[in-house]
Length: 396
Image 1: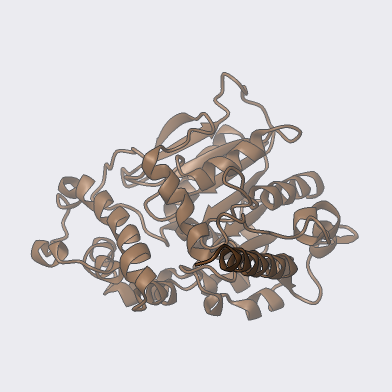
Image 2: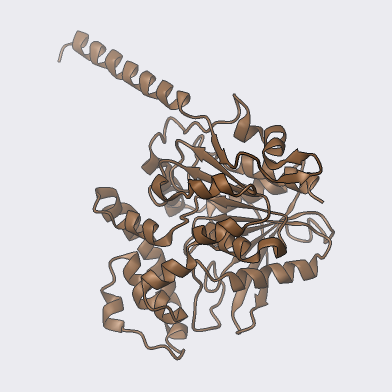
């Protein structure tokens, strides 16, 4: 190839990249979906008005947008970057102090407080309660980045991450782990936090499967919900549809997402296998050794451990979308339209349009729990922190 051909090829490539980047910029504005009239959060201020005045990362013409890093321009890159980075070294961004609490049936939950109490002594400041995703915990980068921003100046909120049974180094003390609908454990954690800090207002945040769990909880509680507000990030909404999306016969599902998610679940199971099998439920060891799909895991392990007929029964009873019409506190959901795990088609837009307490913030890009603006920063902690500050400052 001649030098002139190389130059021409370079010019064409650069032009193509510039066009694609401009297209990304032009489609980066956050879009809000909500009822025609949202609920009042103050005497004369609606939820939508409050977001318009206090959450620039969601509504401002310049700031209300997510533009993916030019080095991570695709959904798959956005989704996989945390996992790739953590494979070499998991970043330690924040410091925690762990507290272990017991459930009524003898289970153990780990509460990771940040900042540690030596740095932030007990008082009545607001508390943000975070719930991790599938087989995750407080060490996940997406959790740490949120905690970092919430605890920083000027807000200096207290945070606590709820690490469910068997996760993030929490010892399994019952024959069951946790699942995406086990709201009793979340309620137990909230009861303990409220007892320890009775004057502190609370906001709950959930990520992925943890988003499904807290959304289900908030809907179940209705008017009696102890949270001041709640935030859902990359919620699957419909566990069966999300499982089906992961099982679709695409290259990325077969070789990336399904194996990675199943590996996390199987590692969790194997780590606690003796304790799980010590209970009254009999498991098919041969069938479990042949598990290839998440749905099979939920058929053979989750459903049997928790008394569901099968995965369809578990998904049907624990998917959060059916509980959302009963939510009666301000509720913000962040979802990306290119999420490969929680695809656009399963987002319950009609529910967001009919319940005045719900606000859906849609981004064109972001993948699943990605939202990487650069190799070192993410977008979602900003709208989360803005929304928390607005709710804590405005609501009684």
